[in-house]
Image (cartoon, rainbow over all chains, first blue to last red; front, side):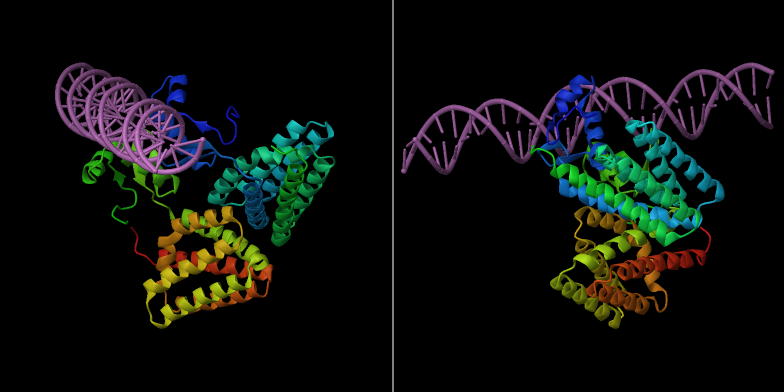
Length: 198
Length: 198
DNA sequence: GTCAACCTTCTTGTATACAAAAAGTATGTC
DNA sequence: GACATACTTTTTGTATACAAGAAGGTTGAC
């Protein structure tokens, strides 16, 4: 994980030797990686670890915002009382992590909260797609948590989202979630633009 | 296309012989098919053409509705005058196909219209995801076109969508598109429930 | 007669060998 | 000296051979 620099070419034979297997399983693994978008395959050129440009990442955040909004919209209509209790519980755990100042724990509990939401959409397919996107954006979601005040802000957004779902207010849940994720994209943009040139 | 019944097992060797190639390219093709969701791979068992249950298909329609709504929302904010002209043109072609009573042509022109919309979201990633979903739902979108009055209704929905985008009314474009696709899911459900048991 | 265990066969997963294509290098010509 | 062309090398794509696992059938015991 993170062993290879973005844009680096992955050599089939050396990886095969290193893992003591033939090229075949390596190639199959490459296909799976290409599928999940971590690498790109160029015909007759080889596979390269994806250099997700900032534009692409922002686009992905934009889509994630809409997907999570969809989850919220459906969850607001379908969540049972025990679902909402679970959501409140997950949010409380986020709060505890924030109070402890533990960014790593918050990051983890935040993931739990969001996945719970995906599941509560009551749509398995949507849940899968949302999880897939979430995983791809994971590293970028993390970096913006270190911005001053972001944890507190994120928490407040969560709380408002839970209440909208509890109230069965589908459009509001959708709007809040869209904004919640869109903000993450903006924060990412902010972090990127203040980084030294690569 | 449609050569194999849902749930049928695809044999590597016979397909390899038939296409005069070795098993390797067949296996790679299977991976791609599994990726796009047309087949499922069971370890040591083989690949089976996906028997998408009605529930799964309805879930996919629900997601498609949200994804297209997202495209519409963004397109309403980003479409240029020439984009809108293109959209009107594509819609006019649908109208012509409908007037000619050519369901196949309508089906095709309808696809063009929707793909145009995906592109006009101005988000390449969203465009790809929407296209991917569109392809998976293709066969199911088609069958509901044969319902009486559906072509006319679909056309009217298209026209309203174009006007909302032209007016830059993002929420309205999103809502109209969500409904437009959701109706397709409902129609599919309708067709399914009136089919003899398999 | 039925159930269980073993064996055979069929099929996928992996390894390796070979072919084809692309990139880099060297040589020859202008 | 520079550019183009041909050759070499490197790397992917494909074929085939082999191994391992799963399914089904057969045989034996209770």
